Image 1 (tube, rainbow, N blue to C red):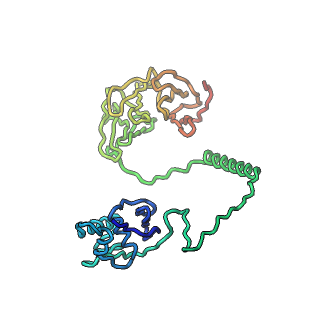
Image 2: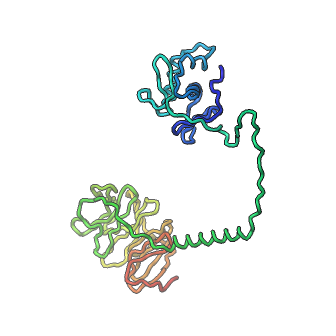
Image 3: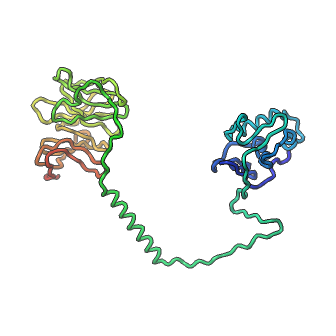
Length: 346
């Protein structure tokens, strides 16, 4: 078979580029899957853009000494070309079919340099100019030091600004109604309505209709009816937090007349709860890595391991310590209450 592609120059049309020497069709620099006979047909049409290339000529170029089903092979190749280029026979932008005559490439074509950017071409008989070497003066070391020092100062200033700048005020971009029961999501007046999510469901405590016992409930994060999370507790339940892997809930069970409550861990999908050691407190929360639990106890702030061991008092305050929460950015705890003071740090 004779070589059907003769030009070694890049051919560009629209966002496409044909490299005949490499046998590649690219779109915005990305190689497309067009090889074999379809690529050769496209390359032949691009040799004479705007002119009709007859089916007989294509046959002579592609299959000069071979008996093949020319109509079938050409139709298959043209269909493949149109598929890759996103073209159509009814409204062609690139390849036009002329019935009983042949095909014509109708888009504007630009011929550029070869695919090798280092290759230079000169008119026949004219030698390329010799390469010219330019001597460069060495860059003084003091300039390097000055430049590096200035870059370091700018980097430090940027980091300082990013860490010290106040966070922008949050903005409400939209809201969705989740529940329709009209009930509070906490059974005590002085308790914040803790609502946590595993991404698919929302978990919260609600007072029972009788007002005597709270329950742990759940609802779809996209809204809908609430349903209880199965538990074996007979006391009122308060929700504290959800673990970082969104698989366990941190609870506290309310004991009448007691300000501090036992802490429990319950699988989010329901199951057997387990005590957090012998820890009692309120408003408990997990650390971001799940290894620690912080909780309030009167005027004091405590932290323990997640299993309730190694309890440690962190601080005392002038008023009640409420709702400690971890601040991951600084690995600190923030508390809600009247003028907390860090006094007895252990």
